[in-house]
Image (cartoon, rainbow, N blue to C red):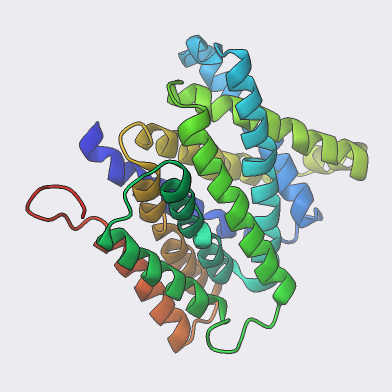
Length: 298
């Protein structure tokens, strides 16, 4: 399984990169960005609970420490991250938003080196610089663009909560089964989402809308399956075999996937700087997989 761990992260990244497809497909659903994301999270919890109750009931075993970490991860690392990411996509497009959140590896690397005493290698350092440069170019900041500052801010804040998710899952939930690490944070994220829907939205109108248009339920369920259930299972499983910095850098394939989805499916435009940014992010991904003769990244 260890040798497949990088591929699992890459597959998770492609699925995460498809997030904008569902955002665009549901743009005319009558629900706002946060409403769509919240409904998705609630559906994801129900689907995960149903799947695990049939396939692996042991995944429901967890202690108090695990619950506390799961609450923090679910509320901040999952729900707030997804809300901010969805808002960023709506304002600056899926390609730009997808790259902006990949300031995340920078934050993870800084934390790991300062507090976890992980080795800061030359290859990781170069990959980090390439990653930062790619984010700056695709966002438009480096070229004097980036005219939607609120959208960019949402993307940067999403990166912060994304980094928290990865760090807390890798260390706060270390030792738990991947399915347990997937379900309980999702449970708290779903509870947060349901609270938002009940307090700030008309839950009866939402329910009536979903019942009258089963197509919306199908799209939302597929969104939850592709971008929540499958992705978190793959990534959490891979974290059992990869260090958090390497896993975070490998997942930077997501913005490449997001840009390609945006360009080929929704005709989003990417100029020279945007494509150069994609190249730099992809280069950083390839670089961390280059191993010296000793067999370990240096």
